[in-house]
Length: 177
Image (cartoon, rainbow, N blue to C red):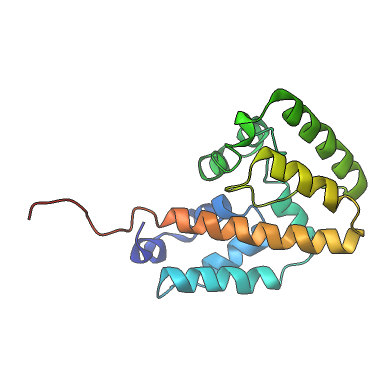
């Protein structure tokens, strides 16, 4: 999508587009209301600025839009509109040995029982083993610190998804005129 196309969307469709990036409704409404944007960079900067004004209920709403690490099927069931943006974020987990996947699932249950929300990590490029190490380390955090870390990870995920919106906004390649 080109920036001009994003700016031209009706409010409902623009809001739905932003909800694919982050399921916090207040964030998506603010992003929709901030149009028109001058560039992709402006969208990313505004996404960060709006996110910095969000509060714990918004964070929790955004977190609820994610599958548990190692369970991407849960996202498809809950948020079919977001699945296309998030489907490959945990692709390396599926390649992990079954014992690692099993331990990740157990750690996810423990993490959620401690903090009241699922483990949020920007999984892009991380192996299952790396995520397992991260979840184990983060379970020892105080609740406020963990909420702040999870919110920062959400912001990273949102930026990746925003960039995906604009993936087809590239000059044509190849020969010919």
